[in-house]
Image 1 (cartoon, one colour):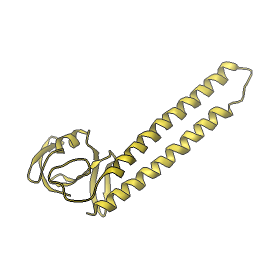
Image 2: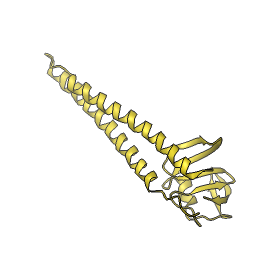
Image 3: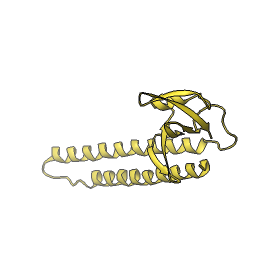
Image 4: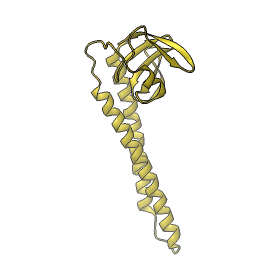
Length: 148
């Protein structure tokens, strides 16, 4: 599996999510700004507050996605790792894992893989493992077959 191409694919997925979050953030801001003052001042203020809350929620989502994108930018693709760490592509008896950002189950180059955070339960159990080491996933013991 081509790790450089995988990172590029994940960046594209995050870029799409960034665009969606940005558009939603702008739409919520416009909605809040477009509320016209009515005779019912409380209704206006409530609508404006709701629009601002929506905007803030989308802004937080945008920032989280942006931070995940930065994690992918920092992953090196040089030499093969001896032990699993952030940026490791790991072949196991449970399937492929990529310790990077939490994007869940994906299909890449006709292979299913899990893009996981190092803070996830399976990410934590994989960190520091080397080929031949055992780890637990979904209440079963599995083995690391290779690190890339």
